[in-house]
Image (cartoon, rainbow, N blue to C red; front, side, top):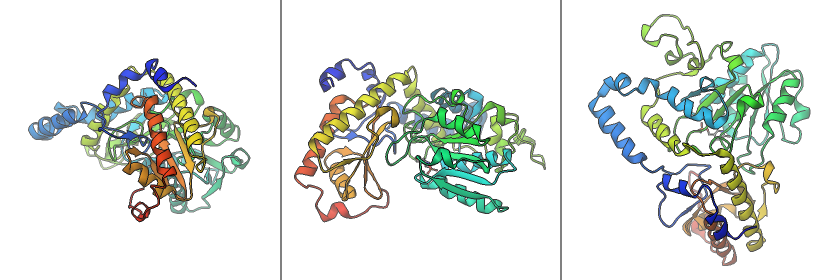
Length: 406
Ligand SMILES: *Cc1c(COP(=O)(O)O)cnc(C)c1O
């Protein structure tokens, strides 16, 4: 492995760091949980609030183009996930979007009753799938399997398989194209959760043959806390989907205020209610940080940063156990280590200027975001982690006290 300073000198992405407003004195390895503030975004938001909202008031829906904002943001996200512009809709949260696409998928396979997911999937995906099965009754059920059992668990009773491409704890990554093919071979539909994929590495939904997808706006896409999420429906399905959340913003003519619901022609039918223009504007501006970015280079550097972090930490902190696949083709853009006192270790690390996060029961999680992290940052972070471990800086009562958000 090249020395960190040499790798930074040759880094084709180093100029992109200027696109972000990073706080001093912090190495941020949590862009997979909440993305950083893009440079220029605060000024943009001041304009949106004071000029667009303050001055134009309700005229802003037309004059400032608010009504078309979700579709514009969708176009920017579509490029990052390998989708046609008209296959992506932006709005609501990932959780709500799981409900929207899962109910759509089930309606396309009316003879089947099983939703299959990964036992280690992010809980909200499982809670929503379970809730939807209970709502539908009629024998619908959620079945779970581990990643290793997944292929064998897909049979002719399965309507839809709901998988998160990258495991939020371990960073293990499914082979989307291969798994989608396997799902289709059994006559089921593939729904991919891209919360830890979109903006982290190249995603090719259309090429992989995915049926549906959902993803997050506030993680790798840097849209800001609680930013709107997105969903994807393959072109071949859109016209056949009757939205379960049949809201007025998905109506063909919302301002005709007709008595009956007629879905909009395309993906717009997946819109539900009034879009949150402030956070939508924030996401819109944040996505400009990806302008002209070659996601293949992002992937390459992400793998280098992850490899370097693993090598540095394993050499310096033998008591931490790697939880992420060592083969970098089998992981997303994060590195996780296990430690029984993981929560306290992470709190001590944060107190010393390296921000990652903790996921129960024992995972220390570090997200790699190549547009603003350098190889030198990675080495410094490992050095600080080494000091936290060697000097047992974590072994204090204050670091064991759990906050509401971990
Ligand atoms: C972060 C995350 C979510 C979050 O959903 P919200 O509705 O935004 O709270 C859902 N699924 C996965 C896999 C996630 O990583």
